[in-house]
Structure formats: C-alpha cells, structure tokens
Length: 515
Image 1 (cartoon, one colour):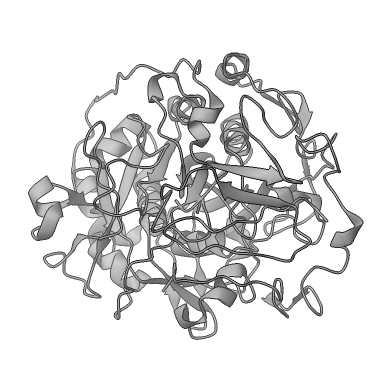
Image 2: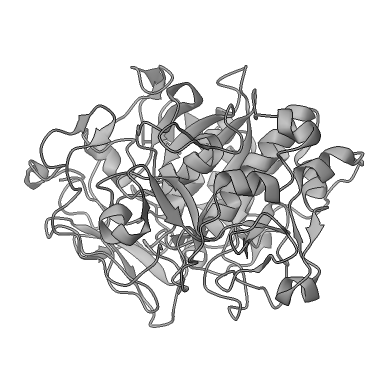
C-alpha cells in the first residue's frame, strides 16, 4: 500500500484511525493543542505534517446554512458590475486534498496538476479527493450543481488542483513548498487562464519567524511572481493568540470567517468564534463568510462518512471554517482580476481590504471588514506597494513543522529532512528564486511527479505521475506495499461520476469537526 498518512488523537479535535494497513501517520509531538477547531488534521487549517486544514470547525454548528447565492449577495457580487463577472480567464491554484469528479464540478473548469500526496503512489487514489475537503473548496469557487441550483462564486474561473493531502490530511511542509514552487513555475501553462490566485486552506503547526522561514519565502515568491496568495487564518478560536502559518506572513491575504446568521444582511454578521485572533504581529487582513456553507459533497469520502449529519441532500455538504472563507476570498479575487486584469497582488489585497465594516461583536471593535466586490470595483487602484523584507530562508524546516509530524513505519520525519533526503533552506531558496527548483517532474533533484502533461482528466489535462524513488525517511520499507491491494473503494471505483462505496470501512472518526 502507499504510505498514506494516518492521524492519532490530538488534543482538541477528532482524528481518524484508518485501515490498520496504513503505515504513515500524522502525530502530535506535544500535548498542547494544535488546531483545536480543526478536523481532518489538516491541514485542511486542521493539519499538514506541521500543517493543518482550515476547513472544519468544532464549534456548535449553525442551524441555518448560508447558501452560495446568499454569499454572493453578502459580498456584493450579485448587483452592478460584479453581477456580470464570472472569473473567466483567471486561473486559481487549489493546493489541497485534490478534487473528485462529482457531477457538480464542471469538467471544463478543472485541470489536475501534479499529485504530490502520499496517495500519488496508488493509481486508484491519485488526484482524487479521498478526504472531501478540496472538492468542497472547488465547489465554492466554480461549482455548478444542477440538482440544487448551487453555483460557485466564480463559475468560469479555471482551477488547477495540486493535491498534497491524503484521506486524513497528512502531508509534510516540504510537499506544500514543492506545490507552491510548481504553481509559480507553471503559472502560465494555460495562456487563456494564467494562474493569478493560490488558495491555501492550510496552516502549519509551527510558529516560525517569517523573516527567515522557508515556507514564508515560498508564498512570498509566488506573490512577487504576480499571484495573489489567499491563506486561512486558522480555526483554533478567538482566544488563540496567533494565526496559523503561512497566514501570518505579511505579504499575503490572511482571511478570517464571519458568522452570517443565514441572512444576506451584513448588519448582523460577526466574527466566527472559531477564527484565530492574533494578539501581536500581523492582524487578520479581511473577513469572508465561512459558517455553515453547503458546497459539493464527495460521497464516501472521509468527512462524508464521518459527519453524515452535515449532508444537504444527495449532492451538498455543510462546512464551517476559515478554509471556506479563504475559498470565498479566492473567488472574489478572481472576479476582481477578470474585471481589472492589470491589477498587481498588492492592489488586489488593498482593494479587497476596503470592504464593509462589521457593526457587531468583536469584529466591530477591531475594525475588521468583510469583503465587498462591488466596493472594490468602484475604487481607483492605487500604486500601493508592499515593501516587506523577503524571507532569507535560513530558518529550519523543523520550526515550520512545529508540533506535528508525519511518521512512516514508526519513524518520524523531523529535522532538516524532506521525504527523500536532506533539505537545505538556503539551497532550495537559491533555486526557488530563479524558478529552477522544478525540472520536469523533479523537485530539487527528486522525482516527485511525471515530467509533463499527459492523458485526459477533467479538461483533457493531467500532470503525469511517477513512482517515488528510494525508501521512506526511516530507511526501511518502500513507498508501496502489496498489502494495499484490495484496500480501495468497495465495489466499482467510479460509476457515473459518483462514489459506489465507502472509502475505508474501518474509518472511525469521532467528535464533530464539520457540521
């Protein structure tokens, strides 16, 4: 079987114990809470190895969902000039848990970039969203669910999915850095839809100093290359004193979530209880709806099996978190860039920050604003330029990981190592700055993916796959295992774009991260 990460119990949120065959796990090396409000350790800001997904909140779920149509009104995108915008011609890189070809995802709006996750080593799991998080994000952006009339906020934007997370979210920060590098290198692979936005609904478990952190440099180089980087602030709660990383980086857009009470009026919107509020350093840049949002469901995925009460009909699934707020913001950025393609990332950030002041609760006292697309369109872009110092990348990757790590064959990936060998932040930085860290499917000399586009997937493009070289970082075993045979989806793999069975019959998530 491929060494697919498994999570153990972490303080403050539920975890998964997948099939006993799985040999890679995400474990806490500290008893302190990581992302207390996060779900599938991920990263999706619930967990990477050192990174967490930000898409799930353990807070009491809203009894009133906020539909994407309502969100379109809340963010000022359903009237005036904004109502005519679709995101057409704008590419969004979704670095997440992959996307599943469910019926509500238009094939013409999705392309698979490389699968850099552990599941890339299983032909039957490669590119697919076994977790259910990435598809939920994609639905917020470009979904078109004819069964319910649910339509994404930027329905004609083009998503390039770069899968990094597995069925329980586990992934190392070096994999995410490689993903960001790949996006920068290949941002113009589709001239009609150049990648102008990166959505990172992830955050690390560490709290490094951004002035010398490798992850910080990765997102900063993407920003300098003309890509708006949107990052989730994290779901550990208002009392948590900092945002997750890389949201804490000064260059990019850090997004918190609002509770919209199921109404389209912004007068009752307030900061969600699960959003991290920094007590020092960089504050949250802006807010976007992120509570009880129905988006595309992946039947049989991890979260679908774990939280059946979150299902909305047969095709949708409710989710709350700064992940969802980040996806809303990425879609809004695509609308803005369609209307004004010459905008720089600095200008997009500045315009989106000039949203609607919230009038109640903590957000009002903090002067936080919720995005408003029509307001942004009406403003004259300034020549504003951020002048923060770029990271030197001389810090340690271990500081970026923080308190969680991936483990293969009971050996922890820690220290200055990546999946395949030593990792030098300075050596990587020298190549990243010149956009030479990737050569074909090799990242820093290691074959992580195929060497180019191949096959047909979604809009007739898929970045090729490759068998990973060598052995796990512990030096024993291999990246694949015959025991994996038969441990796939029950029954047929896909049938008419829907799952025909469960992911793993032995899933036993507990707690409530989604709704």
